[in-house]
Amino acid sequence: MYWKSFLPLIIALSVSIPVHSQVKADTLYKNSIKLNTVALAVNNVSLLYERKLNPHWSVLMGAGYRWGGDIPKVFGLGDVIINSSTKGLRGFSVTPEVRYYFNYCGCGGPQTGFYAGAYGRFTKFNGDLTFNFWNGSEYVDAGVFGNLREFGIGIQLGYQFVFKKRFVVDLMFAGPRTSQNKLKMKIESRHAEDLIPIIEEEINKRLEWLGRDPISIDPNPEMEVNFNFTNFRYGLGFGYRF
Picture 1 (tube, rainbow, N blue to C red):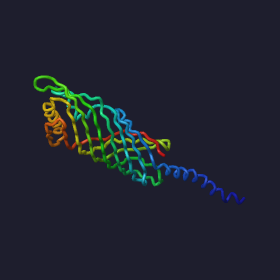
Picture 2: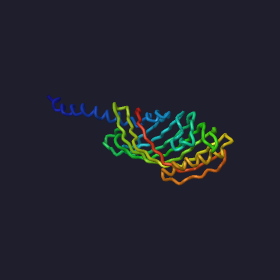
Picture 3: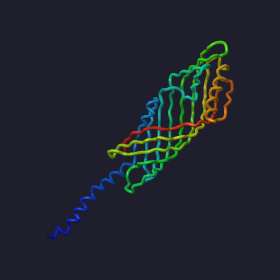
Picture 4: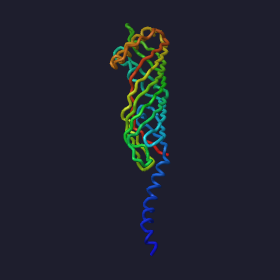
């Protein structure tokens, strides 16, 4: 029978069509949106959008909003001579990024495996603080409105994998960066001249520990400080491809 001559061809086509369909379907998912679950622990909602450019490269844009939590440890200023408390920080961050994935299967699939990249960071936080400190004769309170702005650049290392075709896990396990920071404080207290030297001393202790140059703050109730600082980015993202 003539049909027996076409039997091997029919079998080959029936096997290749599902594979081709799978690859074609996978190439349709060039976008993903991810939630950084680690950021939630510090009252920060952080979302990351990723766009695949080719098998190796992708571009990303992150955005976060913080609605609470304490001031960063470098500004904690919490020792014997001064205590601080805050109603919580408020602010946002924007993080553009580019990544290179080392894994390459040649099948047009998703961005998976180990990756390295570079990212930028713009952050702006503000909050109301209360300082209680010893001015030499008694403990006094001082209300402070703080505003912190950061411009930073860094590198990102991590590992990403996909399961059930549409779901993605992003392990961002190393992301050191260097940042230029501007801190503004408006001190509402007649004891501002006593408080500013203490703030300067405490910040310089932390900068010295980081190997940074000390800063000098003018004795002005509306103070402004510029300094460099080393920070770190990390996270565990869960997302959906589309």
